[in-house]
Each structure stands twice: as structure tokens, then as C-alpha cells.
Length: 403
Ligand SMILES: Cc1ncc(COP(=O)(O)O)c(C=O)c1O
Image (cartoon, rainbow, N blue to C red; front, side, top):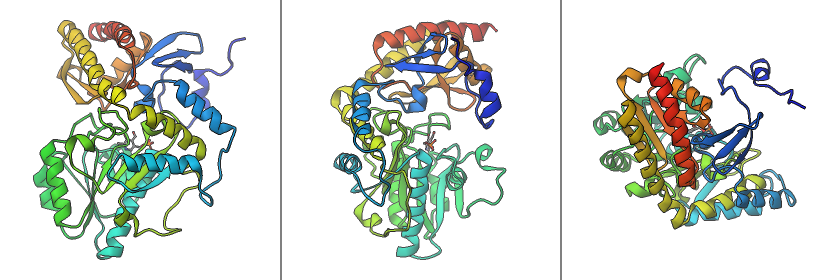
């Protein structure tokens, strides 16, 4: 019997804030996805940098199944073993020694911003509340995080915003110098801006911002929701820059597709918090943390991390082949498998057309803004899958170019 659940139903029952593709995926394995009609797609989108180990990785399925028969939820009135195990793994492999678990990137950033404000107010002055953020940044959709994000199209239209947030151009150290002062409590940035078009921070910029934060007793927050957990070739991107933040947020790949996020910080900063200051019902949920532990153990291995640059090189080679024929890309951006291809000016504002036509040719890709195509596949996608997806993508590009 044909499914009664159709794409048309979406337009009737779901809040009209998304414009999903016209097929409904029902099954995934590795980097392949099947829709309701049994059509097979190659997945270069990875659930927007979430499915870091592809779909239904056997180790993640096993972890979820095993935990599902033990304990699902106890709230934070009690702690649980998977949460403590995952926190320990994060601490053992980063600068941090305290972890707060939540459920989404926005919540991790909300916690980071609240922590930075609270720390500055308690430790220095009630007036030390200024947050420096960057144009084109994206930090989530809660009202605080969307106000800190640097894109008016997401933050306007909801009435008065949280105050004392300043936006300046990314990678512009002089702009930071101009606004940094004793009232600044934090600078927040993505080491590689994700939604904003895959712009990587320059090393000089991150080093300079770190020094300014030190000089003015401001905290440096790295939002690694999209660029962390292996995506750019190291466990976290800050490790490639040798610039250590005071607070780091992680989500997306952290659960390999199971909703979970984390905010990491130091003992000294964490010491400002006490029971009741912040919290969440689901954060540190045993199911999410059990899957997170399994994902962490696979991603944080030399094989997986080293394979990321190899895969990027294959992607770029294939994109170059497409470009030789159709002259559509201007430059390649991002790091590792957070890969962007900026379109030539004559294709600006057409990124969405490319991804719609790509879906017709059975390959799932993303955009990052109107001018950049984004590829965030599984970190363990095979060479065959890349090649097959690129054959399909080439046909899609040909169609867009000739339309
Ligand atoms: C850098 C960054 N921060 C925060 C978020 C928000 O994460 P979530 O959608 O899980 O709330 C995103 C989502 O795309 C992101 O890319």
C-alpha cells in the first residue's frame, strides 16, 4: 500500500518556516538515502554537518539499542553514567575541565553567553556586559543567540532584542580593537563561519582576538557547533590554530544524528556557577550521551581525522573537473569536510537552484547563503560514493548552466 504520508501534508501541518525538498527520505545507510519511492540518493549534506559517520552507523545503532534497554531519562535531579563518560572524553581531549550538556547548538551557545555575562558581572562589574560578535555569524535561533548572530534576516521582526551586543566585520582585527574595552565580557566567533558562507578565520585574527581578550579580561567563545567534532580535520578546529578559547560549544556531529550539544569551559570560569543558575531537563540524556560516546570514539581516531583531508582533496579535484567544463565556481572555501564552493558572479543568488536540481539528479547538497554551495558529507564517505555523487552533481550543474 502506498504511504498516506506525502510531501503535500508538510504544507498543511508543519509551521511554514522550512522549504524541504519534494521527496521524503525514509531510510539511510552510510552515505546513501532512500525516499518513499525507493529512489536512492547520495548524501553530501550529512544532515547539515550532523551525520558525521553517515546514516545508521552500526556502532551508533548498537550504542543506542543497548542504552535503550537500560535507562532513557532521569533528568538532572540525578546524574547518569553515559553523561559522565562523555564529559570525561571531552575533557581528556580538549582545553576544558567542565562540561554542560544541552540538546541543540543554540542552547549550548545560550549557555555560553549567559555564562560569560554572569562571570563578568560576578567577577568584575555589573557593567561588564558587552558582547562582540561578527557579521554573517550564526549562533542559533533562541532570541539571545539570534541577536548575537550577525544576520538581520534572522533576528529582526521579534521586538526589542537583548542589549549590549556589537557586530563588526569578521577577520578584521582593527575593528575588534576599535570596540574592545573594559565593559566587554566576551567575543564570540565561529573559527570557520558555517551558515555565513564558509569563511575561515585567519590565524592572525584569532591570535589577535585572543590577546585582546586577555588584555581586557574578556572571555573568548568559540562556536564549534558546525566546524567541530572532526569536521575540519582535527577534533576541534581551535586545535589547528593553537588558539585556546575560554568557552567552546559543540553540537551537530557530537551525537552523529542524535540531538545533543555541549558547552565546554575551564574550572575557574565554571566556578562562578552554582545549582539553579542555569539548567535544562534533557541535557545529558543517557540515550544521547551513549550515542555521543560511540561517535566520539570513532571520530577521535587518527584514521578518521587523517582521512578528512584526503576526502577534501578528492572533492576539490572533482569540483575542478566540473569547473573545467562549466566555469561555475570562483573559489573553494572552508576547511576539511566543511567545504564551500563559491559560485561565479553570474550564478550569484542561484545556490538554491543548484541544490534543488542536484536533488532531482539524486544527490543531496546544501547552500551556505545565496552564493556558496556547501558540502558536509559523512567524514567516512567512501571514494566510490564521492565519485558516484559527483557524476550526478555534474549532470545537475550542466542542467542549471544550460537553463
Ligand atoms: C555555528 C552554529 N552555531 C549554532 C547553530 C545552531 O544550532 P542548532 O540549530 O542545533 O540550534 C548552528 C546551526 O546551524 C551553527 O552552524
